[in-house]
Length: 217
Length: 387
Ligand SMILES: Nc1ncnc2c1ncn2[C@@H]1O[C@H](COP(=O)(O)OP(=O)(O)OP(=O)(O)O)[C@@H](O)[C@H]1O
Ligand SMILES: [Mg+2]
Image (cartoon, rainbow over all chains, first blue to last red; front, side, top):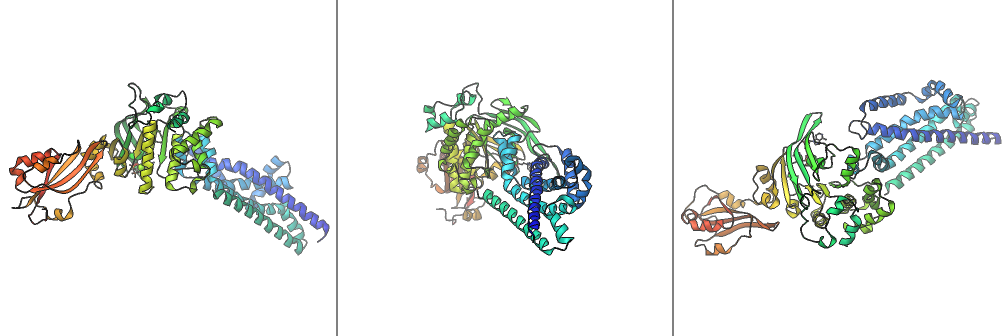
């Protein structure tokens, strides 16, 4: 492999890391409140709002139903509005976040729902207000599950970001398509795959370690 | 130690602190009677009904419950599964709102409280649970501190109060452990510390010892009794174990189908249960006629046989057995279980007297009556190996 190719791969790696990192950050910032809303606004929740709950739930399902590659295209007008462009790393972050947020929210929702109702009751009995229940009960108790879910989300996003690369977002997927596929450079293809595998392994290992630490107490 | 508890658990300036005894008087065996006109630590239910709406239709869990719980009592709630015990208990801190009727805590109705009022009320009422409900993500210390943390108590005051609450339950050395590493008894102690740290007037216990082994149960009951006596906290507890009621309660209420069917001091309800439900619940505590005699029981006296009499003692002085010694006819003691509940002799004796005798010689029965209520169970023939 030429030094330029190595340089290109490195740049692609950084682009992927940036796309996934920023999108994952957005998914957490938007997904956790969304998950909290889905859990607490249902019937019998601490912020009951059944109608809004149903509406939001349906919208989330809608986003989850659309395949990423379709979402990528369907969101182009929105992406242009937000990012000012439809190509490049920052443009890819828009559909990546939009797709990852409902995905992560649903996964976090499962963990939040598993928090024992008795704990919420105990918290109420000691004079916790609803915000205290969010901060001291729901989130900390669900944290191991949320972290595990976040790991799954990030791994899925690494895959999705490669797909985004195919439509001009840059990153490892872009390199693999342009050099590995269109120019039949098998070495590049293999190296990109190896990098992706390594990246996924590192993310999974970090996530598993964090979950194990949280569960050990 | 006691003084320390008072100093640190007391929240200066609150009515609760004013209600507490002076430290010197704190070790008195009985909780103080509230001063006239003061109602701190009392709970009153006025025609409380609760109907749940469930998928299968409405379920009436409580049906016009009227009940007054005095300050400083250890009040037991018993009843079959589904009788409404938890529903009733949970109306006290409004985890459950009655469908109709009122609950008064410290003499004040709680039905119209807004969020702030409700939070303030709950800070005066501790609650412990069958499954402890401790936060797994927090250490013992953080669990116990939580009621103070969310109440906005300054950090420097939280430390000593948490330490004192942990000392009260004997868990000072576990402060930095996570609950998952504790035994059931220790977890319940953390639950108690968490319930007591905000210096409540009332402690609600929903089957707090049901998940514990008998020995740990006794230790927790000792602790609860201790808390009641030292701090004067009113305790309302639900249990399926009649021995728990007998062990620590001053009063008991029996629920059946959401209604109060019997209530009163434990010595009276346990000594002379009136309602069939109460009798059924107490069945495990009362031993029936031994099976060999039961098998030979007949309604008519047989010549040379025996009459079986049951003597029920419900709250008199301890039975004076010397009267029996003076009886002309033999009085055979078959079975006896007399217990002291709240300083009163409560229980049953089963005796056999010669079959002809009780009818013909009223003096024997009269003497037996001095021991308690006499009731003729039946007769057994001469060869029933009674005497
Ligand atoms: N949230 C609820 N929704 C619907 N029905 C309920 C609810 N909670 C309790 N019930 C019903 O109300 C009745 C009384 O329940 P409650 O829990 O007060 O009984 P309990 O005496 O505490 O029983 P246990 O000894 O089994 O704990 C039961 O028939 C129960 O099924
Ligand atoms: Mg119950």
